[in-house]
Every structure is written in structure tokens, then in C-alpha cells.
Length: 83
Image (cartoon, rainbow, N blue to C red):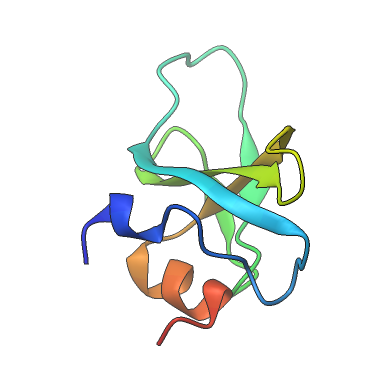
């Protein structure tokens, strides 16, 4: 599946939100050690390494609702329960 195909899907764990965009991502700045936890597998991600960035919107108004960082497309599918 192309990453753009996930746009508009709702994460099962976060009803009321929809995926606005999915992109491969990594932080360029090396000033700080930035980490995030994958909401699917609970792996602590070093944001300087490649991962997926998911931007979310509220389903009713498409207002920005936050970002989630996931390990890869396998975690993305599991998190969305799209498998």
C-alpha cells in the first residue's frame, strides 16, 4: 500500500481522529536526543532515525489533532487495524 492510501482512515485506538498524512521522517537536528514511543508496539524510537510520522485530524472538523511516530508500515497497519 502507498503511504497516501492510509489518509482518511481512523485508528481503532483513537476513535474520532482520522489520518491526515503519513510520511517517512527523521529529525535533522542533532542538538538534542529526541525520542517517541510507537503507539502500536511501544518501541522507543530515536527520532533521528527513519520512522513514520502520522498527522491526525479531528474527524468532525479536520482540525489538527496531533502527531504520532510509528516504527514502520507494519506498525502503522496494526495501529489502524487495517491488516
